[in-house]
Image 1 (cartoon, rainbow over the protein chains, first blue to last red):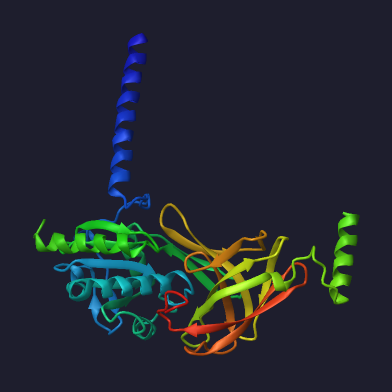
Image 2 (cartoon, helix red, strand yellow; image 1 turned 180 degrees about the horizontal axis):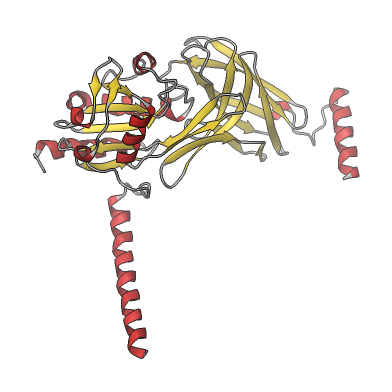
Length: 208
Length: 155
């Protein structure tokens, strides 16, 4: 019994140390603030979905392999978060200059009912030309969100319409398809741009 | 309760009578700065407007609603992003502003959500937006419409 208790304390101690290490890693790796605690996306190479880009091309996770990728979710009927994210990203891409041309930048709708290929084409046209808009059947969007461990939910509004709650982080992948990190919604560009450079550098080094 | 009603009635009477009651935070104490909004694509999507509302008076003021000829259902909404990084948007309800304090309506937080647009929001135009306060006071501000990709009032 006593031995059990000691073992118990030992396990608790190990747990505490593990927790401290985890907290330390968390704070050091974060940009001075915690990243979302949601699960990280799987590698693009492990995803399987079929969508259409805003120019009508068939696209999937394989489209993104070979270049670093910045991907995020939203919908064009979103008045606040999505235009803010798209204009933030446009600003980051402007900061990156020529380097931005080496990346895939993909805006994936969570509202395919309203966001047709034509709608996506018009919408992304207002932002940085490097941003591609992807849409597709509802069940394919669900598969994308699954792979990203992203969530979205449709909610009715008082005006008789509906709105979407959705993951607002920007996900960064290396050219290999490996997930690198994410940028929180509305994160200042002094944190965001270095994170993007990190994803770009992984490609240069040819890491995994 | 009774006393409150009496005071309110008195206040309303005073306001109606055109007396400047110094204890009441009137519209003259509210200053709206840096108002801006983004252009819309057509009229089906809700618009959003941003600004800073300052209470320069000695009494608290409470923002209770909005009106504008531009939209049938203008309402203050708040975007919240939870620990999982999921953003949601909900009506913010009444917004109290303490004396000397200000409230910022800015991307990713509070915003004037303009539902049921009556006309498209065109870059370069402006529209009047009236803020309604609980004491019956109103402040109307002319909001400039910037580009869809605008990030702030100076863009």
